[in-house]
Image (cartoon, rainbow, N blue to C red; front, side):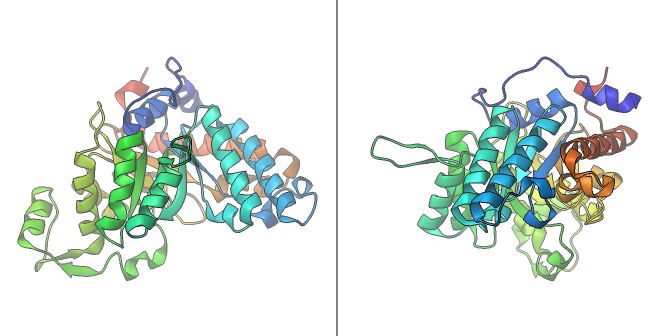
Length: 350
């Protein structure tokens, strides 16, 4: 379509991993280069892989199938999207072979110029959180000096142990030019059980929220708003040259009204937006409130709809081609909604 050809028109290329700068600036550069904010999840499920990829039933064979599957998906979409997101759980359940497939996937995606988000939802307390931060984002000790281990660009983290569980990750982001997405309002239906629970807030919290344009009733607000306030505090000290921060938030696509409020509280943070697509019901129009008026501020993810698009086409031999076509559709859908809402970034317009 004409819109899709317009989206694919790119600016001059550059290696986002060689840029020594705030992660948010690198992410913005990658988004501008591809002219879209879409992210492809890399979540292989062994029983749903094209049958010809699995040569045996050992964990090594399954992990090898994951690697083949992912590398061909990356080849199919690397010129289309700025970001990919492997979910660690799908890999680590197959033990060390699975973790190796994860690491190989990360390294290959980065070699193709993609920014890589690990959906790991890590956090703990004290030295354990520090170990997670060093292993996934920072550098680990060896007798010959510190060096990178998993070396992700961004990591999803869980805030519900408090700031002593979060601080080590923020430190790693500052030290190594990495980023995090803190869980704020997740896309799963039962997120309302705890995240939407009304809690009493202090006068300072009330004033801060009201100054951001949030309506407070009877001195209470949903818990996710308090988490968002903490994200905004962290974000303030981690902004790049373009004023966006490397400290972001997970905000699910099925909750556009909440996203509109959360955007007011966290104006400088990127949102990682899961839940777009048929499986969880998030729509292109529904994700628009996750973006600022300048058209930036969110990365929209789709995983299983793209990974297993071959099932709809009944063509396992062309699973990568099916994934590419589904990705093209997603880009057109998301960018079309942004253009319709008057939120397409100026840098994308010809």
